[in-house]
Length: 229
Ligand code: CA
Image (tube, rainbow, N blue to C red):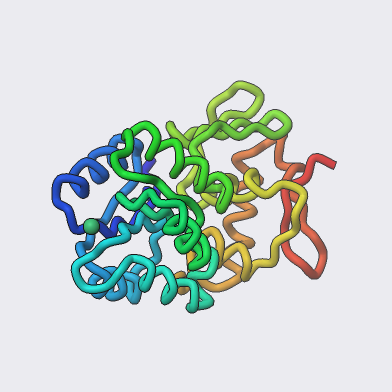
């Protein structure tokens, strides 16, 4: 089953570093897109919705901080995790980065393992449904690495949309979501599907969950939630 890879925008002008970053991110199962300056990064963001930005500080046209400030000024990207990746290691530079809204800071030279670990931690913190660790609730176990779901130890067949929906619910248990929130969070801002489509997928999800289907509850006049209660 194909599952959307996490897309990461890498803004880096040094080819050798960009290459190492791309190799590292691909090895971790993510989908990196490299641009070499602030203008190209901005253009990319007009048409795409990456889940994270790795941002170099010194870039040919403007500083990474300028891009960071522009990103933070846009409501739609307010919560987008940004990790600064830079040779600047002075304390005051770090403070400037955080002042502009950077979420984390990695100083070059960095180890690929550290980069992967920092990104994983950030994705888990910012959007648990994008994390790579196994999630378990009641008898349901979801493994993001193999994109598989098992119930009571039995692997089940599950469609792409239902998998994404279940993963989102498991990342946010005991919280009710409206249909439009689910559309937005699970299918993304650009989805052109109707709210009742959510009902169809919830129905299908419950069907494949069999004896565990009671976990997905309908919350009257709100929407749906995953709850053990
Ligand atoms: Ca640079």
